[in-house]
Picture (tube, rainbow, N blue to C red):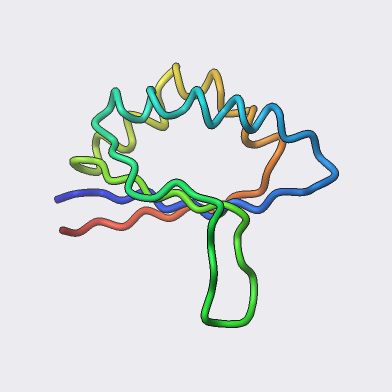
Length: 98
């Protein structure tokens, strides 16, 4: 069963975005090495409902939950994680299904 990693990112305009941009460039090959496939990776977002709208959205499909967990627990990912955690706020969800 596929596992989907869904992330909604909010950026603070007063924080230097360069570290996060570096994270974006460096995370893709790590995700792909664990079988992750980017389905959505965009800052072009609209919402038909009032409320919070993220600045960026990412949806990644992994072959299974085990691969997803291995990816984000990997040493390669841990080395770049601070580039994200110190520059943006993110809400992440994991969904399993078709």
